[in-house]
Length: 290
Figure: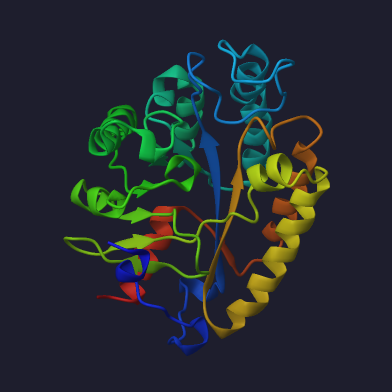
C-alpha cells in the first residue's frame, strides 16, 4: 500500500477544532530511545571514523560511545524527569529490556510507557522476518512490564510496505514513524486503521547533533522555538509536540543542561499536557471516532 493509499491529504486549517481535556491546549510527549548495539555487526551510527576506513569489527570506540549512554547518560537524564515530575516514554529494543534491565526497572517503577523499537537496532527492511521481530519485541516488553504494548517506533523510523498492517494485526494501537502532522492521524491497513502519533525529526538529538553537527545548545533553542510556535498554533485547535532523546547523545555531560532547560521552559505552561503516547491515542480516538 502506497503512503497516499494509507491516508488522504488533509490540510490542518480545514479540520474541525480539536480540544484537549481540562482546558489544556497542546500535548507534549518525551521519548527516550534505549537501544542495544550488537558488537558483532556494523555500528548503527559512529562518532569516530576508523583510521583506515571501512567498518571494522569489533568497533570498540563507537560501541563504547553508545554504551556510555546506557551506563551513565540515562541516569543523568532520569534525574531531570524526576526533578520536573515529567512522565517519559521508553522506546526500547526488545533485546535491551533484559540487557539493560536496570533501565527497564527504573522506567517501570516510575510508570513510564514502554513502546516497541525493534528487537535489535536494525533497519526493519533488513530484518529477516518482520512479523517475528515485532512479535518478539512485544513479548519481551510485555513479559517484563506485565502490561500491553500499545505503541511502536521503527528503528530509525524504518518500515517496510507492510509494517502498519502487521502492527495492527499484532494488536498495536499506534505507530509514530509517519512524521507528517501536528495532530494524530489514522493510517489505513488491510484490516482496520491504526493511529499515528506525531513524532519529530526536527527536535531529535540524532538529527541535530550527529547529522547537522550543531552545538549542544541547539537542542534547547530549537525545542523552545518549536514549542512556542506549536503553542501559538494550538489556539486554533489542539496540537501535539514530541521531544526525542538518546542517552548517548543528550545524556553526555556537555549536553544535559540544554535538555533540562528546554523542559523547564515548557513546564512553566500550565495549559500544556505532558503525557504518554497511549494518553494521546486514547484522547484522539475519543475525540475523533471512526
